[in-house]
Image (tube, rainbow, N blue to C red; front, side, top):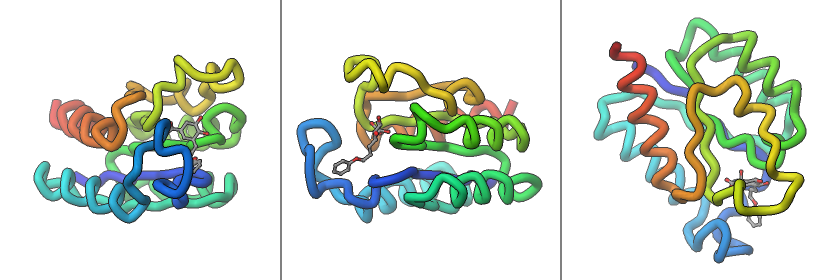
Length: 144
Ligand code: CA2
């Protein structure tokens, strides 16, 4: 089983600012966390972060026929990107949306998730743990 883990803009800056919202650990720690989870679950993974919408769209497109599922935190593009929504729909791989923070309790502009419309499940407000839940959810779904 092979999963693509995608992270959107500014997540590479984790730990530098807003620790009350996003925690104190940096992006390298998130990568290590997800790699450890995938190792424990016996899942192959590729973890990719970009600050560019088109690069994320290209990566989703390239997942077709290569990966079995996608875990995606589109970051700010969650709330704006029909292009990412369309790419997820186009490849039609099971996708799970993750947010470190509980976006449902934040600003009005964060209340819409375009990417979420193409996802089978969303985890929010769990910090890094949300990625573990997402990987495990996809594992169980794909084993059915
Ligand atoms: O809670 C999440 O995971 C988000 O996807 C994070 C995004 C935000 O735009 C979404 O609404 C919710 C922001 C990503 C990183 O932002 C940083 C801001 C300051 C310092 C470091 C990272």
